[in-house]
Image (cartoon, rainbow, N blue to C red):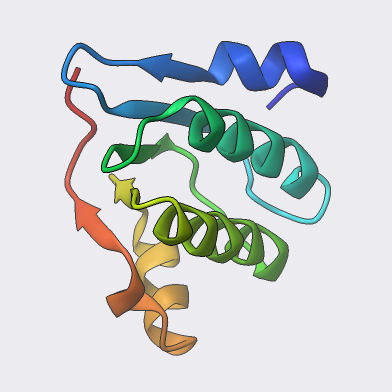
Length: 115
């Protein structure tokens, strides 16, 4: 993941169906949580009420508590706006962490982000 607003904009893509995709690559850890948060915030602010924000995790294999916190914060913000945060292609490690923290049922999980 890069840094700054330009990278947040680059990582957020509007799909034809009105869904937004945030494509994550690399680790979702303490060193990258701020960038993840910026990307998610950009998608949430652009998306209309009722939209899905899809977090494409196919190129991310690690998530620590800072990454999970960014996702949980974005989920709460999405709910406040009538949106839904969807995790696409989460790794085995990510699913295991969601299970261990009791947060697996808080997210819609899908096998892949479809364009």
